[in-house]
Image 1 (tube, rainbow over the protein chains, first blue to last red):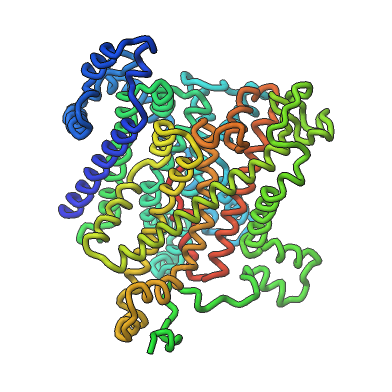
Image 2 (cartoon, chains in turn cyan, purple):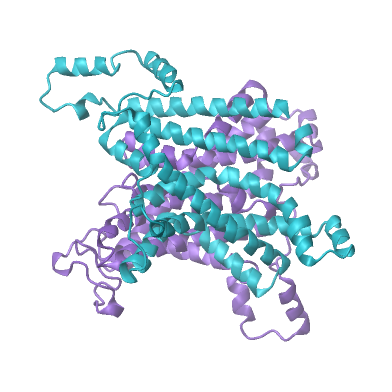
Length: 305
Length: 335
């Protein structure tokens, strides 16, 4: 287990360094911020002062090392447009994104797993086929389009829910469902196929032979074992969830990190873009690390590997 | 003597296509019972053709074929050009709710015909996605073959690049990449290729590792075949099937990624028609012109659905043993 933790942590650290490097290089390929932030009539001297002020006049590797050193201490520089620390700007928006993704994850889990278990126990029936049809459709619908269709129907036509923004519970309904659908489809698909595999195992037959109720067999003996691969898939798909969150936030004008990063990109507010991408990537990598380790908890065999 | 003088040596691996399934499509137990009892209803041939019993396999290819056809024939079947403005006919509704046959699906805010733009949009989406899948497959397969075969430091580098990339939220980086560099077609293709090559590299590398120690490879080595010959003649044919399956799912994935980026204004740039950018333009008129945000989305769904179904079809056709290789495991990011 110890070796596993070290190996996973090393990989996570490498990923973090990769994130910082990629974003840093991209930002500097994209042009000189002094041309965006200073008025066009600014003199060459003004520009030089500006570059010096933000450390943009030093060699790139030095800028990167200096940046990393500060970033580790939580200093991502001042936001060009907000004039407050970039990290603070990002952290203000983080709760909104967390709220959205956690709600979506919860909806997906609560709907998909029972539906998939039901389908697996009724394999080949109309219910099973209908669910697989929904799954296929769910994996083919772009999140942002689903969001717009919900706005069109539930907000514009029926006036049941607010069009966009964040505030009451009603605001959360459409964005979280739109974001959840694709994950729901994926979870249902994986859970169903894992359940089918597990239900064919000898120990399930034994459990049945012992006279345990069908609910006990599927819910306790089978589901617990089927959920292991589901955890892996959830981990692998977190990136998709974050991408989906960016799209969902855009469609619903949800004031999260996704919309913040897009705004900052448009304004060329580099410190905020860097801080935003890195914070999201850190969250993503940490959650993945936790899931990796959780896997060891769920399956004691892996602790010895 | 060359190794190819022993065709039998190329034993079918776990991933090979060497044992094609029977021509008869896969039947579900219910369909089998039906066939045996001889009481097949009249719609059976129809169902078999569209492949309802085999998971919609034929239907997928049919849809994909239709979309490709629409894209290819766009200049001839579209009623108008994709950029023909008619300011006298702005925001016309579709024909069945008061529009005219001149613009069957209505028009946008510049009076451009929605149906024509959707047909031309099929070109854009398919050319970009197919092109990117082909480049990614070629590059990823080569990387996978070489890194699996050569091993050592090269393999370590390729593997860690793949791992780091897979451990990042892709769409976030695609957005950053497109926004910070010029949002042009070349950069868009690069971003799409970056999404997919890792999937191929990983798949092929694992396949090579599993084949490396097998007898047919050992024999080829013993008979003096060079590295290139072994990789191309003995190992590559065995990864064609899974690569085709993955390509179908990657096509679906990249169409969604492209439309997402175009929706954000970071993908295909006007006046080139793209389903994603059409949706983003239509968004401003969501309360007055619902057709603008509806039909381009349906076009995306139909195409992605076709590609997903076709992926299932190719998988079942090529090798029933590949069934574990579903969308679930090949799609990793990008909504």
